[in-house]
Length: 430
Ligand SMILES: NC(=O)C1=CN([C@@H]2O[C@H](COP(=O)(O)OP(=O)(O)OC[C@H]3O[C@@H](n4cnc5c(N)ncnc54)[C@H](OP(=O)(O)O)[C@@H]3O)[C@@H](O)[C@H]2O)C=CC1
Ligand SMILES: N[C@@H](CC=O)C(=O)O
Image (cartoon, rainbow, N blue to C red; front, side, top):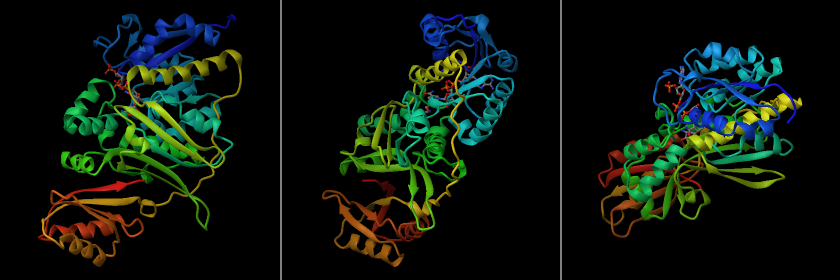
């Protein structure tokens, strides 16, 4: 090892991820020092409650609730608090004092990434955030660096471990959404406020980050269409099972060619997949992300999308990589070129919708319902009826099935005496 001085590491947060980062830094100190070429000295761990019982036994003398002072003393700040504030201010302070930053905070990177990257560029510092998308899966660096010479056209997949875990348990064990969420929280997968998971905010933040990186532009989070899984009922899961399909929450980021130039779109919503689709096999809290690029073709990234030790692996990867640059010198963080591609409205990129209904068990009812759609200008691609029960589902045409048109048909269906219940409106992808 060369004789570079110790690098002072400030860790903010000792929850599911932070406590595992601290454990690995302490347990693997010698190995990490050899890899970096300098010791990584954990100088403090910032938390709210210094005396709280934690998953991992951490040295009491390292714990502090004075995060500002801790940040001011560090060469590298690792932020694992979550949320926007105080994380944003602490990281801007860290960069201003010359420190580099590692974060797993997708909400922060999605909402304030450009502000942090600009501050880092001005100050010659680095911001690394591999753990912000896909937990343990390397996906940020492949998009930012490995594919920097290619033209990415699509990034699509499962990017939230908690909702995948919940839907998996609903399908395979008949769990309720609430019970499965409780287990996901116990396992350290869910956000501090799990609304972020189940309402799709977390996946939308990740879609914002992926689309911005993939298409070298800045996608405002507000323009990412978002739907979560709270509308998915046991009946909808049962209906999907009956038709050999699996419900998943997916993020889809696309480059849309057009006569006036390319546009970009990003969206998050539940889909109903055929059981043979590769994403249907993604179980528990695993994530899978497909990237399509013009020259590279199709690439697939798969692994643990959530969990303390798994996410800590990605955080430590960033930390070691930044620490090595301290020791060896070298370029700062790669800055992305901003082509500022326009964002396509969600209505332009709708996937097909499947509408599941419970209808009166009489001949001709479905034809009448399909006629109702035609009256409202929505084409019906196919109609399916369960042989034994009065369940039916209609697949609506892509180009006519705008949200507004579907809403007007749903209003009309409510009044249709042969339709007993509208079970779901789910998007299909092939
Ligand atoms: N859990 C996961 O699987 C993954 C999480 N992430 C991201 O990693 C980050 C951390 O997640 P996770 O470990 O699950 O979060 P937790 O909620 O488990 O832990 C948060 C930690 O931050 C501390 N903290 C929060 N706010 C403050 C504050 N205002 N002042 C001082 N300390 C504070 C808490 O302290 P105290 O304990 O005293 O309350 C706690 O130790 C988040 O951004 C999350 O989105 C990314 C990928 C996966
Ligand atoms: N709550 C998140 C944690 C990882 O990003 C998830 O479930 O994916």
